[in-house]
Image (cartoon, one colour):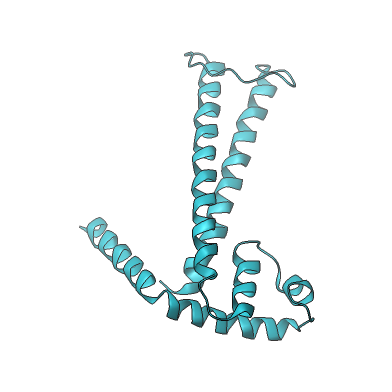
Length: 158
């Protein structure tokens, strides 16, 4: 696994949470359309065999999964942020933190992340060097993750 792929996991985890929330809202809207919930009414957490009970149960499951995913994201984001802070070059730390922890677009990083304004092209170049430094500093960790992925892939192909 390379540095960019590893750091990109933060955004993928955040996207999964967004999708789960969207799915949950779809089920809640289905309840509204069926007449099962009124605006402002708290969703009961019961498992009846009727259509409303089934939907209530599904919403409850989804809420627990969303909470679990949020906790996982927060822990992973903190871990990645601390790993970024292990870099030797402050500018590289800033670029990676802004991009992979705060999801800032390149233009915003160029305009506001530093005391001086840089061009987007310069930020992209700096980003490339920052990834190389991250890769060098965390070589062992990234190699171990590669090994784990290949062993899982080998086990699943059997």
